[in-house]
Amino acid sequence: MNNIYNYSIEELNVYFESIGEKSFRSIQIYEWLYKHRINDFDEIQNMKKEVIEKLKQDFNLNKLSIIKKLEGQDVYKYLFKLNDGNTIEAVLMKHPYGNSLCISTQVGCNMGCHFCESGKLKKVRNLDAGEMVLQILQIEEDLKIRISHVVIMGIGEPFDNYDNVIKFINIINHPKGINIGARHITVSTSGLIPKIEKFIEDGKQVNLAISLHAPNDELRNKLMPINKVYNISKLMEIIKKYITVTNRRVTIEYIMLNGINDKTKHAQELAQLLKGVNCYVNLIPYNETSNSKFKKSDKQTIMKFYDILKKNKINVTIRKEFGTNVMAACGQLSANANYKEDQ
Ligand code: SAH
Ligand code: SF4
Image (cartoon, rainbow, N blue to C red; front, side, top):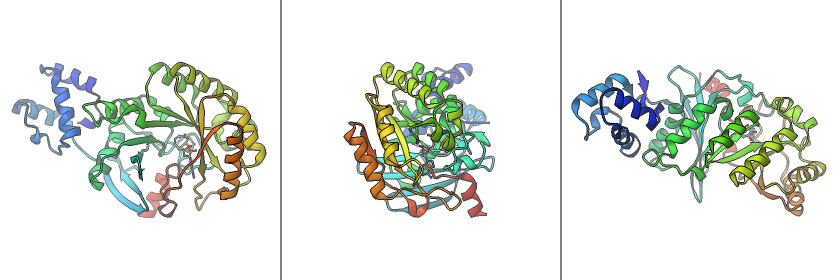
């Protein structure tokens, strides 16, 4: 039986037509799922009994199980168990402008970035779109809040699961679905160039963030194995194309790693690389993990780096640190480590 949260409205149109029903039923079902938030098909009030019975035969409304929840100042980390027993995490952050959820897209990640917990566990499988949608629905229900922003920056490389991620974006962006505005959705990639190319062609209005983390190939090769396949000059080329075609600004993510990529010369090199490019740099204080050899840069070093970029007219912000006390920040998520904690 198929989980109904994994269905786009177009797929439901096809389904309803296949059972001899009008396709507007798919809009009705979206309203029941995403506006009224039903837990049982019997709660549907505007469909004939036979249609409801048919829905019950063909679909389920199964949820993920929340197996752990950690709370910090304005931050909640959830550990979910999927129906096949794998675990993933999502992090809810309360900002003055709204509630933002960082969702996972895969169990593990194959990109193997050396500073990242998610990369330590090889990819086990892709999440389907429904499993991504449910992270939003269940956290909204648990905290009795509405999520206004979604960042696709949890466990996994979203562009290594491209089709499901795009389907997920379409479901949550749909006016009859959860209706999260495209400009409130950000997808982050380590730089899978063919998929960035596809993303440009698809013309999605969601924000794009690129995990750069180093201003030259020598250093980026050491931190991110993907750079050996798609190096910085190729990455910059596609970033510039994205900006030209979409007329949108790109976010460049740069984790500050003590003594590795945080020196004056790195800031200058980064400023040079990004000169004239319509982007803004997000400096990310590294979240140290117990089994990582990397350390976070101190505040002065981050400020100095920031100042150099500013002086060179690069737009730059420093990411607010969330949830170090609950090991919760986005990008420090590990299905592996946290599952062990629970056993
Ligand atoms: N795979 C995608 C999205 C998930 S990672 C990507 O790499 O972009 C989301 C962001 O968190 C990335 O920029 C990643 O480099 C960063 N990140 C990973 N581990 C981190 C850590 N321990 N502290 C801070 N940021 C981290
Ligand atoms: Fe994967 Fe992103 Fe972590 Fe790299 S930083 S291992 S791409 S989740």
